[in-house]
Length: 267
Ligand code: ADP
Image (tube, protein in one colour):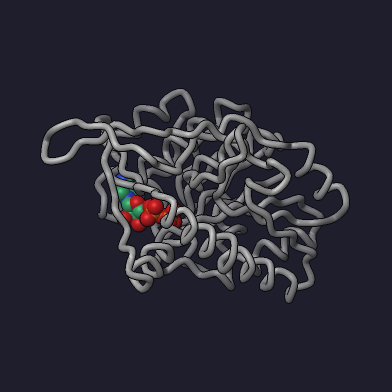
């Protein structure tokens, strides 16, 4: 079993990634696809007159402030558009893809962070009415049922709270939780960079291998949203996934390349 996280960052080639996923599925490999969509949500939020707002936590993580309107736009873009287009692509390639988000069948249950602590102008304060969450449980039975029946699940990054409230979740960490839940051998995180760079943005400084015991230490190289990917990698490894690869989603055969060890391999 392989879990692929497909980033929405500009440059990631949807056709090549899905083409490669289809080739793997046809060769008998069970795959689960998890995708993001923050870039496109930003663009559409602007168009709808509700521009995105980003906040920074005291420990330096950046995330989207998700009020109810933002949550609905996020659902529209990720579940509505991106998920459907990925499923359409896989279907056109002869793969019986099945799109769902963590809301469906309680696939991903998350604890809502109702108030988040943020740093603004050097000062800390609490921000309320946020619809984001941290995944605590994945309905692996549902995924296994789909996989055993020959479907390839394609998952949008929304979760549901125990009370039944839809939440925006980080797609990299969702992919990590899913990989752990389905006992994947590998989690491949495709983005618009060739791997984790020691001196970002110098592409010649890509780290080829990181020992899983040292993954937390590599957080120091990651800036901005890359931090969440490293955190996701660490969570996946902690859940028993043996290998996490950060690989380039802009190139031809992105999945085959990652499986061949290109990118940053953490194991
Ligand atoms: P996606 O939408 O694919 O999930 P993100 O934009 O969230 O991708 O994160 C990937 C980005 O992280 C890269 O495009 C890069 O600009 C940034 N980044 C920050 N630090 C690093 C690093 N040390 N190595 C690689 N990329 C990094």
